[in-house]
Length: 239
Image (cartoon, rainbow, N blue to C red):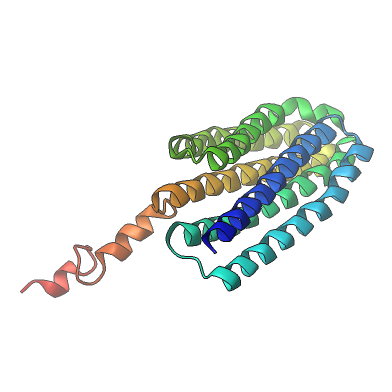
């Protein structure tokens, strides 16, 4: 049974990595379509989202079958929990890629607006995050996974720069307000992709070390609890 479980988990990991590869390609294609305002290429990206959705369902069902057949514990169970979370993040990245591609047709109305933003640099960093998150999962590399959230700060900075630049562009080109709004949406989509890559990286750390890096401040409050050292409870327990 153990050998069969090991094989099935290996197959599950392989399918998830295939999904990550497709999503990364979709991301690059979406950015290229947007920056070259290539509507035909954008349509191909949007159509490929169905492939990502199908893989999400396949990975979910595979996880369910493994749980039902083997009732895994310890590391195997943690692997399934992590795969489920990564699967969701990858599907969401696919959705954001579709949204990125949708904006390509609007840029054709004022392609000069692209000069005001740093979408290429922003997408390079976000793509690096996605690639490294995938590699960390493949290699079981917790150190690499822990380094990925730091890159999110750079993506956030570029997103804020893009927002400010587009506000300035609007003041000088009010007739292109709709195009600028679509580019704000595109910048936000890239920022969200980096957020989901960060989630994947944190999932890898959880898989390897059993440490949950999400919402650490909230976890500290929960850990303190009513019988801990939480400042909210100290006054009522001062005997």
